[in-house]
Length: 120
Image (cartoon, rainbow, N blue to C red; front, side, top):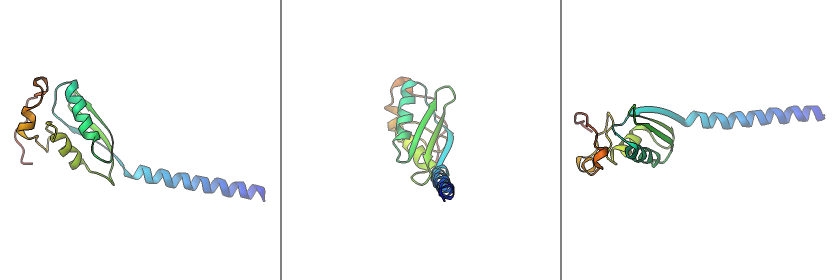
């Protein structure tokens, strides 16, 4: 009797643990995309903009590679929303261009060579 109770509890615990893990693993997405910028000040602003989006767990931008890696909950946000948030603070992605007045207000060290104008 005690042994069957232990087996039942062990199976129940394993099932609950697996269910919780499956829910968490199914919603987190990791994506990488290009964001134009130059320096540590850019890095701080770009990462802060990415992380300000509800559902984003982390945003790490590489100065040398000009690439950002974001981890986010796909039930709360999407890549398009994250890219728009970054463009809204002055930094172009390959799909979204920052407004000229916002880009022009960036610190002089943050003014990167802009890609050709985009239609978004």
